[in-house]
Length: 348
Ligand code: SAM
Image (cartoon, rainbow, N blue to C red; front, side, top):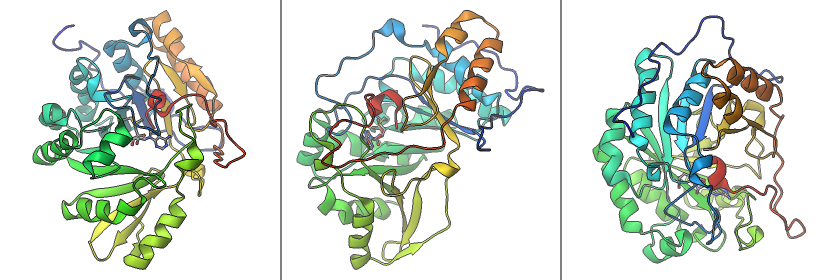
């Protein structure tokens, strides 16, 4: 592997290239890219213990991932989030961050960021900050070391907490994402809020989504955030705030802590009308909606030619098919996952 990706340094916005707008008038300005399907954790709600991962030859190279991201940036994508699997376990991933940072320098991109489980941040936080990454999302569902090991199967809480420290020490703004899990962390949500807000960190709670065969039954994990919010209201003063990140989270300010709390509610509230995002997997498959199966193969047009015309045509065709929304259901009668693919395929 070379020390640096040698890639086109031209400003990304290409004259004559139209922005990506779907048939419902939604501009696609946010791309999430899963750079690997592998992870150093095996979270109960995300993966089964014995996952079969993709053969390495099926993965896009770092150069191909760069080309793909840059093709979207040229079409008006302003925010790029690398995810996984665990993005920081992909070999030489910092080469990709360093290379994509050129789009921040040209002003073509507003934000380059990542979602991580935090385990590798002690090693990478400074390098990420040096690439122009300003904010990161760290997934953390509990502050109890035993529960943490049980939820992640392979993870160690102390490493993740060291990762949060490293990120903050590097000057990165941190947002913690916690999946609300019935009977697992539901009693701990106030403790998570107070811990996060006490360190000047924002917290978002997420409803578990029915993606992939995972072993345990979803219905046993699912905790509606409407219920969590009602319970929190008995303890705290939750003030609605207008703050929006362009994403699905709806925010409140917790008056007693002074911090912001987000609710991401794919099940109790469908937020698709404002969807501005699409997702690409590490094999170059484009998902136009997290909650639908329809997908487009971008790897074939990417590899078919060194110019981007075929790739851009495939992107246009796919965006024209972006569905209006998703419709997740979790109940006792719906025993099948809504979708066969795991969250680790698209990175959430
Ligand atoms: N490894 C990175 C991490 O842990 O953040 C990035 C990938 S992980 C798949 C992204 C996020 O998806 C994590 O916050 C994880 O908790 C969440 N997630 C995974 N499976 C989920 C599911 N079925 N429902 C809701 N969130 C899920």
